Every structure is written in C-alpha cells, then in structure tokens.
Amino acid sequence: MSRTEEEVLAAIERRRRRGHVKLMDEHITLSHGAGGKSSHTLVETLFLDELRNPLLEALGDSALLDPTGPAGPRLAFSTDGSVVKPLFFPGGDIGELAVNGTINDLAMAGARPLALAAAFILEEGLATGDLRRVVASMAAAAGRASVPVATGDTKVVERGKADGLYIATTGVGIVEHDLALGPDAVRPGDRVLVSGTIGDHGMAIMVARGELELETDLTSDTAPLHELTATLLAAAPGVRWLRDPTRGGVATVLNELAMGAQVAIVVDERALPIRPEVNGACEILGIDPLYVANEGKLVAVVAPEDADAALAALQAHPLGAHAAIVGEIGAEPPGMVMLETSFGGSRVVVHHENFFHKR
Image (cartoon, rainbow, N blue to C red):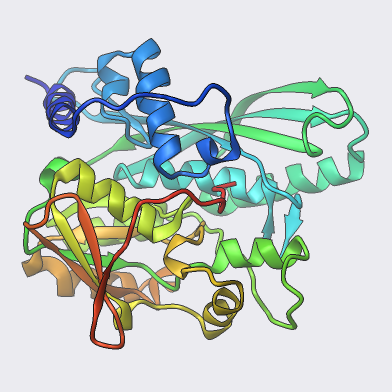
C-alpha cells in the first residue's frame, strides 16, 4: 500500500468516526468562506460528495501524489484563491499574498515549491497602473522565493463584479523526505509550537479598511515559509503536523486538528506571542487574537523529545525569531481545544463562525 493510500484510509476512518453532517443552508453566505463550521460543512457535504476521489479525500491544503510509485518522490499540488479588500495594505498587497499563500500551502505539506500558475479575474475599470503594481509585486515575491510563475490565465468581468481583482494561484512542489505529516501522526504528549506573533495580518487589513481609527504601526506578516519549514524539518525529525493559520487563525486550525486527530489540545495563553498593538486593537474590538488571520506564520506539532530542537531551529531563522512552544496534545476530551488563561482559569476555544477571511 502506498503512503498516499495509507493517508487516505486514515482520513476516511477519522471522518467516519465523526458522524454525518448535513448542509442545511439554502444559500451561500459569507460564513461559508470564513473557515469555521459552515466552511467545513460546505466542503464535506457538497464539494467532497460531488468530487470524491482518493486524492481529495484527505482534504489537505495540498494533495500528495506518487507519480513514480510509492518508492519514488512525492509531489504536492495545491491551489488557492486570493480575495482581499483593499488590494494594497500595510506590509503587502494581493499579488504578494497570492504568491506566498500557495507557497505556504505547499510548505505545510513539507514540500519544496517548484513552480506556480496564476489566473487573474479582472474587473472592468481596474486601473492598469494598479494591475501592473500587483503583477510587479508578484514577480518580486516569486523572485525572492525562487519559485517562478510558469503559466497563467486572464479573464475580465463586468464593472462591480470583482472588487477590482481576484487571483487564483496553483502550485506544485516536491516532497524530499519520508515524514508522514498529518493528524493521524499526532500523539498525546506532543508539543504545539507557533513560529511567531499571531494576528498581525488580520488586524493590518482592518486598519487598511478604516475599521480601526488607531495611530498604530500594524503591518501584514505575509511571507513565504518554505525555507523556514525546511529548516524545521531538518532539525526535528519528530515533526508530526504543520499548518499555516490563515482563515480563522490559530484557534480554527487547532480545532480542525483536535477533531481530525481526535485528541485534546491545551494552549497556554501566557506563552502566546502577540504584539502589544495587535492585542490592544483586539481588546478594543472585543476580538480574540486566536481567531485573527495570519499570512506568514506556521503552527507545528512536534514530538516532545524534539520540541526544544524545533524551537531553536525556528528561532534561528529570521521568520521564526518570536517562535514559542504554546501548548501540548492530550488524550481527553477528544476533539476539544482548551486555553489555560493568564488568570489561572481555563476555557474552551470553540470552533465558531468568524469573518477574518484568508485572503
């Protein structure tokens, strides 16, 4: 049995144990794209039901392919849609976001990105100067990451139909190790790490939209994570699972892991790296930073004996300078994420709907 087949069978069994869910909504709402329960219900009860096949069954950010058989190298294949308003924001723009987002989805599969494809949905009336600026930003981001945009497509829609510009990017990468990264590899006692401060991107977008009247220097954390991931995997062979906490933030990806692996996760609030300006803005709005989107951070689950080596490797890289061990995997209650608060109590980190969109 190939590695891909084993991963698929494990994913099927986990989903079978979770029971059947139904799509009750008659119309699509914003919550279906926000990364919460509605998003997962839509994916599992509509897209997976209609498109079901062994590659899709695992529902990962990237599909893993064995093009030369189980003894050969694996390919990672991923696609991503970028929709963000405004197109330009502190620390980046939609073009850089599109490139980095797909690179990061490949990186979370432990892959070295090889090439990207980009499809542009342009709105009639978009300034060509803005389009050139976005494409130049994509070129710069791809150049910095040494991952070329190898092919693409362009379509134009009527005025008022596309918020100016949407970008869909697809990437392919190669997996050059034998690690089996996924929920089925996670064990009680494993440690949870984040690679840096959380919530930077989501709050920067809110400032750019004018939703926060604050004099603050909030910028997006958008960055390509493939080199950071390679450094981590080389230093810590006990890495079990990787995700970039985009839509729904750290809270959402940890809830997905807890449900998928049927484990408990305990997070130490005091260990969470959060910039004071992000924390302050969240307090003003009554938002939990755990649910705010990130675009240049990863969450890793690592075997306890490799946790210190993993942390040191992350902190030695410029993109991981503020990395921290923030939690631990437990056995009970399965499917639950708990936060040990700075006041000495604890609360459940729920998997709820939110509107901090990935792109």
